[in-house]
Image (cartoon, rainbow, N blue to C red; front, side):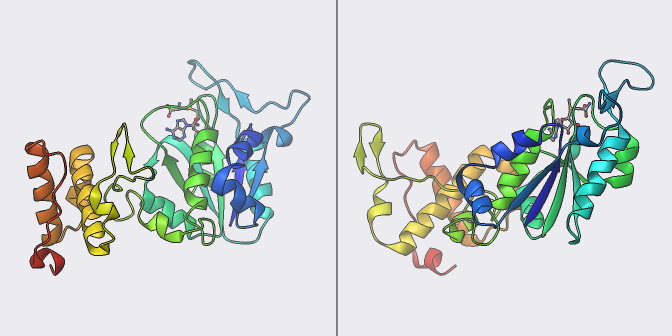
Length: 262
Ligand SMILES: C[S@@+](CC[C@H](N)C(=O)[O-])C[C@H]1O[C@@H](n2cnc3c(N)ncnc32)[C@H](O)[C@@H]1O
């Protein structure tokens, strides 16, 4: 996959993508990242990329032409169809479903604003989609671009060692992930839930599902409205809630035949 980033600080985005699984994806040729700096396409000895807003008011606005020229260069660098995304607090919220959709593409161009943002005419003419990484305002789109690159790259084939691990992550099936534990079993901070060491894969799967359901209900109840819950899911969730209400130390894993064969 090829991702081009239009930014006044392309090295910043490249650095963010240089570590961990995304960095390895780059080294293994699964992701190629290219930075384009509008200042390189700006005219005059000052290489100006911004100007005062019409109508007055504070701040500066990014000029059309340096951005347009860098976009044209990025588009021309590869013939594959490309989607241009402007990272903006006014964009649609970035979700895991959107990340999956972006990860299925071969090319993306990420446009990073600075100052008060970008001249609206360029956005209207060149941008296919606006995406926001949250309801807060960053000083520039670079961190948002790095977030998109990280989330997208890890879903590409061959990037994660175990592709299954992404499928089990939060939001993939509309729920939050279950809690995870590793060695040691006994620690002064607590004991690993015994079911995880039972070797019974059906019980472990049911416990994990119950935890995912319970956590989602507690932390992000609105997600449950959209999730397709089975009857068995509802029984697991009821048991989780009963245990939580009773302040029970462990959540009982329902083991009735009905739950095993919903
Ligand atoms: C200071 S912000 C401009 C905010 C703009 N005046 C507004 O209120 O909508 C500068 C740049 O940071 C980026 N940015 C800021 N917050 C963002 C967010 N939540 N998600 C994605 N990009 C963001 C955008 O590229 C934006 O052009």
